Image 1 (cartoon, rainbow, N blue to C red):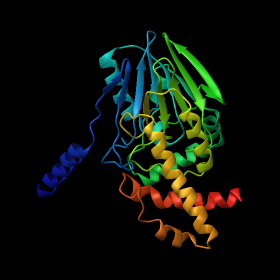
Image 2 (image 1 turned 90 degrees about the vertical axis):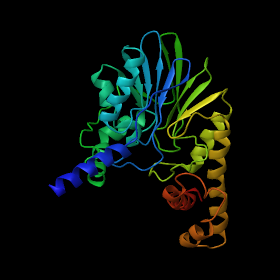
Image 3 (image 1 turned 135 degrees about the vertical axis):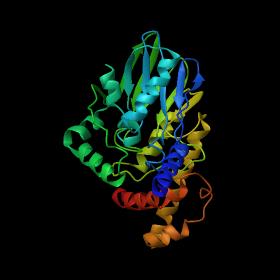
Image 4 (image 1 turned 90 degrees about the horizontal axis):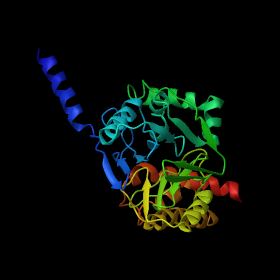
Length: 305
């Protein structure tokens, strides 16, 4: 009996700690849910990224699918409370689990799934399934119901969608955070859905095997030239163009300092130690991502030489 009581308390506490999904209107016809700043876990339900939706006269356009079908179904339920309209499109900004793994929910609802052509290549190669199996092993119980689906349409460079009186420009920005990055720009609203390319007071993850810090810098310079009022990204509250300066500042800080220290003959471990205490150390996810970013750029600079 005592064991059952303790088990019940544990379950209740776990449920209480699970982040609640709250739909927030951020602009006319544009809605979002905000994930927590953490790595995925059973406790946080893998709800550690944002998802967005735009209501048009024809139905919903969703940007990013969250990390599980349970979460994406919950997101749809929230959208239907605003308006029970069809999900016309689901746009995936890149292949990471927290943006892609919930996509089958939209496929089952009849939506057209759109992603970069490299995401389709990732799916067809078998690497996507191998990655999912590794995630299931690492995060026991979290991704058990995930079924991967391929995109119905792909983007190589640019694709313009006209949906219910609204325009969506899907623009390739690769390689940067991954080799499958898309941003979605609404020119009339001057809103940019930036995926994981832009951050404010939060450290980006640059350790993906297909990431390119050099390409990321180039992508940010392209974004800077766009007419943007609101940035909606994968892991922040709504931001402005100051997020470009923050993200670019961190990437250039690492690239410039790692290059200098390598030229001075410093080893990777010495560089990590020398760059441990820096102006960015106070920001969210620094302890989780910074050393991985140092390693990635250290090896990337070797390839550039």
